[in-house]
Image (tube, rainbow over all chains, first blue to last red; front, side, top):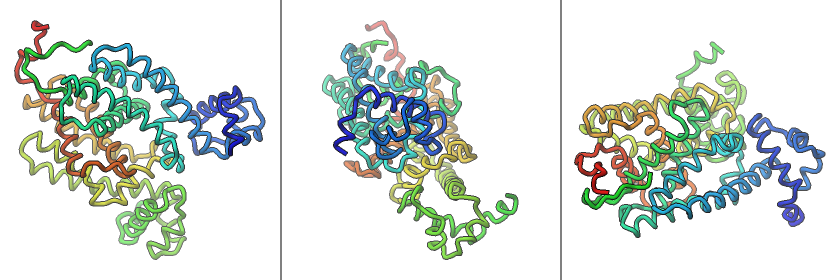
Length: 210
Length: 210
């Protein structure tokens, strides 16, 4: 196990995960075989087992690896935004745009991930919590600035918006595409911002940065 | 296949689905065996195959059966509500309370269902769409009455709120329980209603004060 950990981050490790992403997205997790992944990654079947114990572990590692770099990119985007409203838009938009920027990853996250019976009980959940904390932090900031309602439960609302984005993205993947990815992001941002905005006198309301 | 269809709704069929629900919830879909379900339902293993081709079909039938009766109960609740706001609360509350009224079903819907690789491509999706139409219909009604925003996309918002409820329920199942099921329902209703409420005072929307 310790040996396996040491191989993390090597070029071959990355190549296997990249191959797994495309194989899972194409064939589905259940129907994907280790040998398909090995072939795609141009390594021997046995090599995979130097890095991963079983198929579930590839999926979980893939998830952890991707979500960590996703969180990192998102963080560097958010710090550039001035208002909490722009930050919320950035959070929502970034996740929705995964449908266009990395379709394979979106497919794996939305459809294949829950097909691993190890996933929900794995350490991967911690990474989702890390991600949700980005939302909570912005909601908290907005409350402190008096932009968002005092009584808003940051953690609960973060889950709500995450679930909303997931479901809307899943519908998009399954073929519901009456709106563009941009429009969806704007509409969800609008829903969420109105939902948590502090109620103020009209004159005190300033235009948010979109 | 036609023969199998004919057996739908019989007492034994219902018993098998009831047994499957509890077995799937306890062992997980992946680890559940037909023989476990047969034992729980007090039928011979072979009897299951008179009704279902394979394990995935049991899960999908269970889902379709349950969601249809769920939609029926929900409809009869909604018609008793006067305002569109009460109807939205009813929709949200009903789904959230599944966590308490039928924990096994909640577990199967939230965790096990996506583990069937046939599910997302099955007719079960049509039943989810039926359910989402209940939400759309209420949003549409609210728009007609001038209670909800004209520009709200009923279908998109229905997906959003459905996803939000699912994620919040999943977190609850996984152990996040800082709030009661009632409080969660109220908070989500609040978020959603504020998010789609028609803006009464036109002055609040003008940009002249910027």
